[in-house]
Length: 112
Image (cartoon, rainbow, N blue to C red; front, side, top):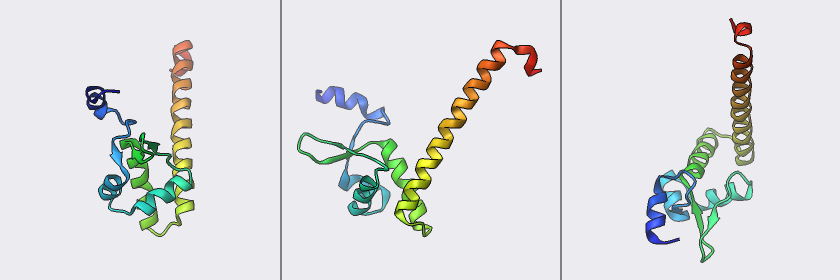
């Protein structure tokens, strides 16, 4: 990937643009906190060619939610589980809405 390719991907939420140090600074947390989220398998940072952790904006949003829960007194393992369950619920609701729209499109008179 060339520098021009990388620059164009900065708008991509999944592009691993942030180093561990920068990610921790942006979140107002420590690098150890980010490592703990990785150990709990909440987020899995990509690795640079040199083996350094790199985080995407999407991963930073998840880490920020974890930090919010931990700051409220939730143990990190429980915070990670809560976030995973929230994500699963959101996905299930999205799928249900898609099925509902498909069913209504297939039988528009039943929806009325």
